[in-house]
Length: 324
Ligand code: PAP
Image (tube, rainbow, N blue to C red; front, side):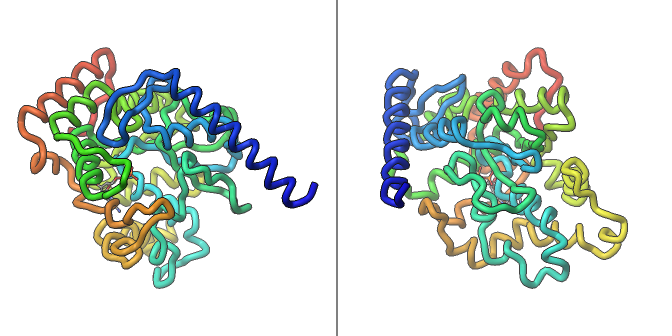
């Protein structure tokens, strides 16, 4: 096949894919949203069209390998941090302490660990490959379930995750964003109609899976990582099969990784202060306060109560509890 024939067949496959997406979208329930004009409900969860395309594409084409590591979270639950930590721990032999030259000093964590929904799969032959996603458990590509790849899920309390999303949306000036009041956004969040929502179902499904399949799925809390970062990183490393040796701990390798990936350190790097991702998002939008309970500065008591009531209802019959 010549190069132009290959390009042509690729274009045909792509145009067929977009046609399928268009047809699917027109058949799905939709709801108005702040993030895009409409969110669409697919397999029980809500997406803006561009992200849904990414989900559908990955369901069709993503081939997980046994050695892959998949980092999962609901938006604003610690994705950027988890990406940096896992990247640093997996590559700790290549970039040893003192960490003067490390890819995380010149690259935003989202560039080093790409989103499955972003159409970027195995571009290099490195093993293990680290990916991230916000895809709910039931919609993960089949190969993630069928292979021996490992999944780490990071969960955050709903009020802080919501508030983080609110500030993120306000900071970004993406053209697809549509303005709405905080009351409207809380209402959408609580009825589940939020990007990758319902937030609670997303977490509960992975939590249950981590209990039933603890070698495959590890469930970590953002708040626990904040309170005891070294301990959390050690546990993640063990789960992934890359445990820290006593010597490494003595030599400060674990401590250096935690320092390198701290909010304080990453947020002041030029690449994270002034950089942009390939999709145009400003990297600084991913770093804010990282507080536990910081929602109190933003949510009125009645809006906080609305989220708490939803949390209470969603957790009926489950012994899972969010951090606060
Ligand atoms: P994403 O889902 O869009 O990738 P994500 O990284 O999950 O976003 O969430 C951003 C939150 O993580 C921000 O929280 P805040 O708005 O409450 O402040 C951000 O500050 C926090 N965050 C980013 N990097 C770190 C880090 N290195 N350590 C701790 N928290 C971090």
